[in-house]
View (cartoon, rainbow, N blue to C red):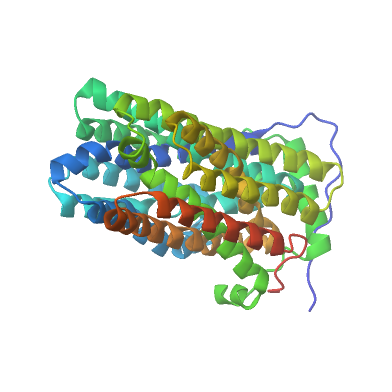
Length: 437
């Protein structure tokens, strides 16, 4: 098959702007807002449980239902990111998810809240596929790991800040409903920020100078010369499913996120019910746990970028970092089940998320393992796996706690997820594109 290859532009002596990195800082804070939206339900759950009289099984359904539509719209979200561009899609998504967050706060009963959470899941679904698309369009291959974790660490930053913000709003405003409404208003404002700052391509951004544009295009041209990444595949997304590396990527990402989503959805309730924390103590503990994940994820991205820039192979860097991540996270969450002291349990949960959140490195894969024109849909497919796990894990935990009256078996399930994450991460070949062209 013949193919066109771009010639690298000449090296500029002008100092480069850093709009590519500012783009991912904006995605970091917008993503953090999405997780404040998500964790608001977990933080407010002790109060919601009393108001709506929910048993553990209904709690599991309510915490899971977000992921039903979030998972269902991953591939359509990735497809739309490829078709209409990240800027337009993400602006629309932010506007819709602020509306559904507002409706969650206004819900008068369990059914209304269930429907609002389903809407929120659908509205937030395009967020990460568009981020994976922007990574492919804005970053050279050697920078994608750092860009990926900068974007993905919004989950732990949002969870950490959200635990404090939502608790403070509940305390100051007198109820969980008022807190949800304030968060919805803040989210609506973020849509304007996205439209003002984000651009689909470096050449479209008024703040990016020619030196930065040339740098990005030169690195992409080198990548294209090596891999043929400018060729647009006409095959369907299902073509990815023929390759083992796709299944290792999807299942590994799902297992890693089942551990994270399990703690995100039931972590506050676990600390409240099993470790005896009150609502104020809960805020401090959840902040410490999730902020540890934020620090760990960005540490992994920094190490990966520096290591790759020094010439290390993608397989050495990714397998080492993800292998360490999965091994320590698995051991830590396993140990939580066997300690009696609440402080030690909180420290172990913080260690679990510090290392477990190295999983953000997976978000460098859509832009690395396929052509740039298909990065959005591959990111959506990968995140579909993740959010199938997000559907399953709250239901599993809810039924386990309801049946046993304890979180012990649930913690063992989390440890099993960590072990699957380890096996899949070590099996991926990070050095070759999926041969779809």
